[in-house]
Length: 102
Image 1 (cartoon, rainbow, N blue to C red):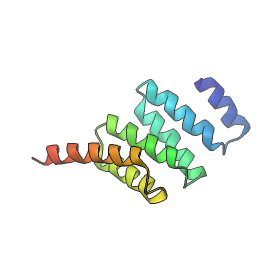
Image 2 (cartoon, rainbow, N blue to C red; image 1 turned 90 degrees about the vertical axis):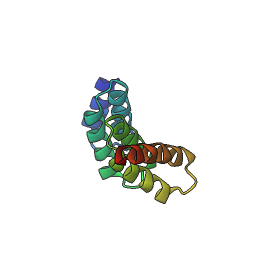
Image 3 (cartoon, one colour; image 1 turned 45 degrees about the vertical axis):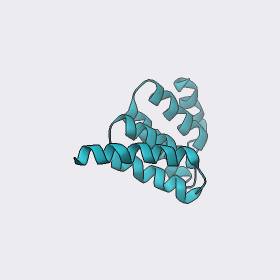
Image 4 (cartoon, one colour; image 1 turned 135 degrees about the vertical axis):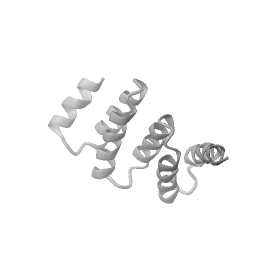
């Protein structure tokens, strides 16, 4: 799948969906840093693409970068205040931040 997304990006370097989907594939392979790079490129191409912020937040959660993940979920909630997935994930990250503060 990653090869297909790379080919799509070669043809259309601004293809938001290809970067997001490549990031998802990398995230599934537990290559979180590489996935985050894809989500960043996706966000660079479309700063209102909520899925990229949400997926980036999830990758950051996996890296235990809770504050950074919370920032991503906050952006999701700015774009769509009714995004229940972002709200649940933000609450999950907040619980971990509080545990780490103890």
